[in-house]
Image (cartoon, rainbow, N blue to C red; front, side, top):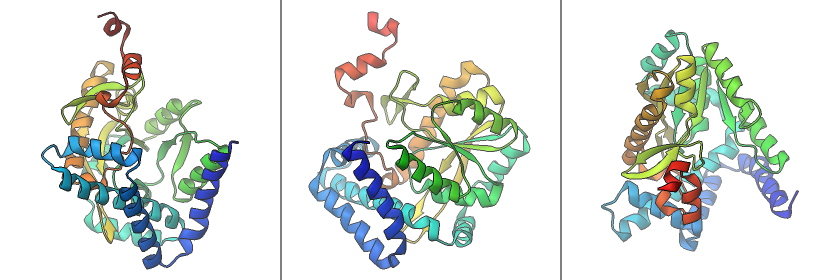
Length: 306
């Protein structure tokens, strides 16, 4: 374990051990201050967030982008505050708050009624763990994938955290795809965060008018199992959360995976455009932001020859 990995593990352990015990006003002020400090420091992640928001709101001038970045960082800080406090929060109360404003429950229930499972795809918006708490209470436990973080102790902290909320966690490698298919064939839900995959496995899509790649997994699982693919929106407010299920997508075989992934990207774009500050994307997403070597590595052999 490197020093940086040990430090990261300690930071998250402190978050779950200390932040959850702070009074809400104190925790809220602490994380808002951290967000504002991050905006002032304007590090690489913040600068990339600004470039990403400039695609979402192309008409925005410098001052509007400054304010959007500040709001985005505050929204992201709120997510982490809630992450550290969620194990000690009243989950029944969370369910009631979300249940009052949930949209598209009939769409979700109809997808389950088909008997082939449901693939729920969502971008990095809002607080998807809160949405998961609602989903567990509404439909029962679901399965999702966690990246195998380093060190192993940090990965296990996230697994323990999300399992405590009622989620089934499988690591992103080592047979995850087979397990997800099994759950869908048992008419369960599979939830996948799916707005970024800058690897050769990613499906080329147009997103806010520019080229990027998104995971093939959601549409591919739907194609193989016959499950319906639904888009999940995670709206948030200063004092609450919501959830919306929409855009049912039936994937008609493997040849429809790429078109279905584009439909998924279009639905993500509409939700993000409606509330840009709640999209917490601080990484490079569009191919135009990658260096030439990285772009070339993503090209197919035919594209490389042209």
